[in-house]
Image 1 (cartoon, rainbow, N blue to C red):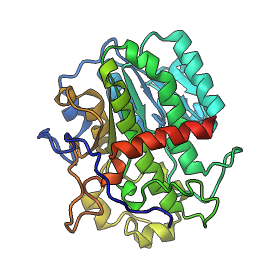
Image 2 (cartoon, rainbow, N blue to C red):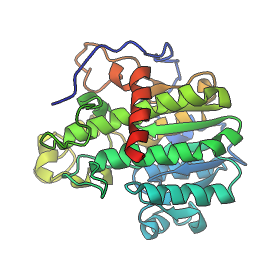
Image 3 (cartoon, helix red, strand yellow):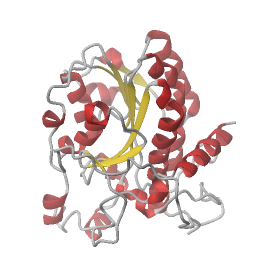
Length: 331
């Protein structure tokens, strides 16, 4: 493992709970109560599967005009029938920066502002795959593709005069910080969970950097851990592996652990929705959230693997370095 767990010091003073009044099992209807998004526009990547579908549904129910960049537009149109207009479902391939830039250009030509961007799409623990550029796929989709999308849409978000970015991180960030010496596993054996963990750290750091750069322009950014949820995101995991993780029994049924600790897809969408819309966060940004609350830094307790945020995922210097490194990859 090439990630060096060094000391981190550039952590926001706001990385602490705010007393939201919500929790792990809060439903979208609870966190969105009284929120009117009429006249607002949102983009939700992966907004047609699992928690993405529920995120899109809740935003639409609040009056928002929601656009869905989708790799499989036919699947998205079927999943979102009666929720999102088919004209608002637009093709994108997050593993291909040119495809992402095409979406940005076309969307910018037809829209004057963007109030909410939720980087919800992702790849999890997949077999080793690479883009034509040689980039490891999880980093390419979860970080590089969303970086191009986010950076390209910042002018529209600035025009909204009070917009929010939400990036989907995960407790998986605790597996690995950024592997600065070998981000794409060119010089070491590929390890799918380390690659996933690194990409989820990157998702958090993107929110940190955008908030730092853009808060004075009216854009606030948050990363979120949606919680444990059984969704199509686990499609690359074999049943044997899910049994070993304790998520499924040998008959292929969810275990008691899942029933007790995991969330429904609707509950999993709630933290994204809270971060995207809650007035409780009007004066805060650049923080990692979980269970509809700003997370506390990871402590030494027995639940440290599952609760809280590790310093390396919210370190301002790491965030700036990753921004610069990603731009170099794209140059």
